[in-house]
Length: 412
Ligand code: C5P
Figure 1 (tube, protein in one colour):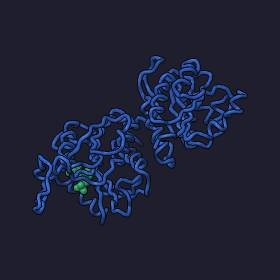
Figure 2 (cartoon, rainbow, N blue to C red):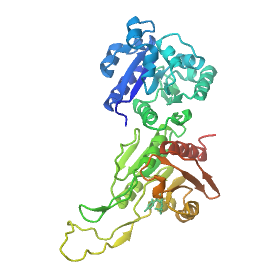
Figure 3 (cartoon, protein in one colour):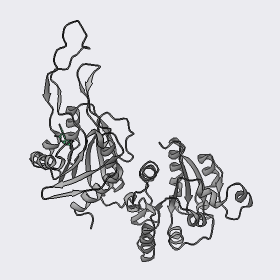
Figure 4 (cartoon, rainbow, N blue to C red):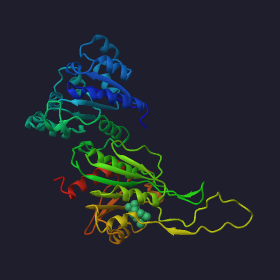
């Protein structure tokens, strides 16, 4: 899905620029084409030669370069991109963007574009906290610019606090969300605000495979897209995320510790081994039953009628975690895949499984939810039903994570 997508990368002048070489490498590994513009200040930190070598493309440095204007001017540079990424986005670049200044190639093309822009700010903590910078950020968010980071931590200037540029894998994850995800995504949605820093979130995702014999199994149509999107959104919000994934075709989310399992029993053991967690989100479509005695050898046709499959119940992971006598996560969230009486069944499930929230979705074949890109969910708690409009699974994930951050007192 990323193959052949084009990113125009604007490198600003900050010490974090050295991390951009790694970002370029990772983008190229995913067959994303990278064109680069460097500000003058950026060239004090990394050389155009390294950038050109890694990106495989000429690096653009000057607004008034005649050759560039005939070959590829600033308008064309931004026109041919699917996404513009500014990293490191210095206080100066953010200010120019917020005020519409066009003083050099970078600021000019940022003004001349109608493409989605993602910025990864990096600056000293006092510059970040300065009211002028905060005003510019608020303006840019209003203008629809996406933010990833900054992170909190120690900085090259010796201080500690917010202002560190996001790591390459975090920027990559935000880029992937914007390139493959829904461009209707609101800008704060990709903002890794560090809302959930220090919070451990445990997520299950995907189907389980329950063996019948060594070559056959019982499965379901879950793709893992919703659970993986939730894990990715939680990681972007700064949480430490452990994802226990059943067999899926999609890649591990970036910045998430992913453990792969096949069966419900394996999933249950991994979940238990990954506790304690502050939040548990059971998005996996765990098989309710497994074959009581899976064949050790492949079952053969021998002319007699096939033996009936005898099933036995799997552990209910969600209910077990909800009912833990000690170490119970502060919030336990489940999913309800229903084909009729969606809300009523989900409310009953919330009570039966003793969880705090259920996201109920209609998985009738006509809805295309199982395996599809979109979801229509109802968020059900003990005393409330909130019906969300149809949106992409990435958007459901972002909205759920903000909701959870709010519930644990991390957001206003
Ligand atoms: O009972 P049902 O499968 O409809 O419940 C759905 C919710 O329960 C999902 O959140 C799913 O991840 C979880 N579940 C589980 N373990 C099971 C069955 C379901 O965690 N064995």
